[in-house]
Image (cartoon, rainbow, N blue to C red; front, side):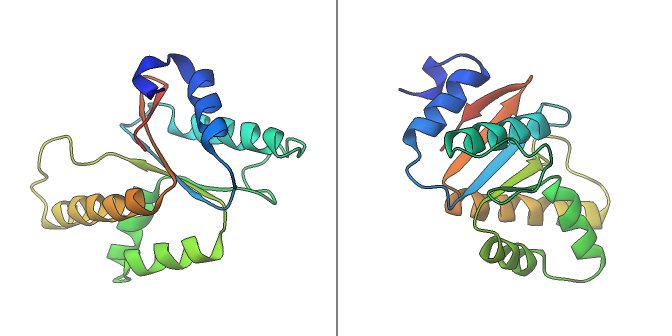
Length: 150
């Protein structure tokens, strides 16, 4: 069943859980500003822990999943510090066996005038493309509704 045929967050979670055979994975959640990415990531953790028989930990990091929010802002910090963001993100993915990343979409608006902002937008977009290729699940949040893209 395709996500477009389902409605609501619960149906999307059930679809994800039913298709998942093992938990060692990367999940990417993208969307515009204030669209519910963080809340959905936290709900995914609760649901995945419940499915695996674990008690709800009440915090973002636990023995099963780590949530790294606002990856786009972390990329900007790395670029400003003259560090390679793709290298650092790859290192994190290798270290964390169960990782949920949230990132704000930057490429749907006006092209920035500032050279750094243009570079940041491009680098973030290219990194997100690579993350989406490697992720076992990719969600796009719009108005608090998750749509599973992959």
